[in-house]
Length: 318
Image (cartoon, rainbow, N blue to C red; front, side):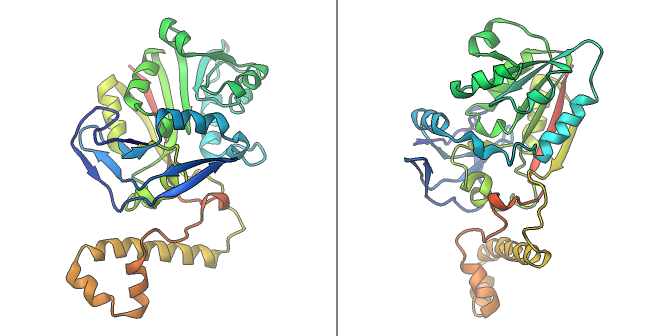
């Protein structure tokens, strides 16, 4: 494991822990186990990035990605709401002459395969297992050497569920901005740390607690930092749910999950006031939530929770 006490985006030491710590967990990729030690989510007061304090080592991360089952990423190959939004946005920008688009972290290029008829599509992916699949779908695959030596002047560069995996997001964004043409657009879809459903207890929200490979999370302050640092025009900042709604969870149960979660968040605030906390612990209906160490069940990943916990950001190069 690696411990980070400085911001990985700007190297500032002025960081503040957000909420309670995340619990130690064991994750499995097939027969391989990864141990997630106790960690905090820190926010940099200089650039605004939210990041995990304890992460897997480079060797462990490489092992995780090389053994990950990519079939887990989509349900029946359907697009998630942020992907559909971005696809529709890009379709509205179609020109007679094909424009160039790079999907940074394209995986098997399922998303790009829907655009190859209208765009000149390029992809970047670190996992060699999926590159041939992407190429078979009509996508030109690039590597680090290509991006370092050749200026492609892309009209659009997209990062869909990739930002959270970046060890040094500012360094990566800097490299990608250089590959944009003037008035080209950088489109990022990722988890939203300032969303109401997770901001008070980020470390125990599924985005970090269930995903050991998620190293950081985007917030509004970091978007402003990127805009200022690279001279980008903020064209859009849209909150959106990552999953579609489902009828598998009744309205009554959704309300129950919501109330439990809100009580838990209230308990965090009450516990900071010892005199009030000591008094309320004598009331049976309140005592239990005050003693919870982690967030209660609040529809998990496999049940497609529909809170607006993601964000789509569009930044334009001036």
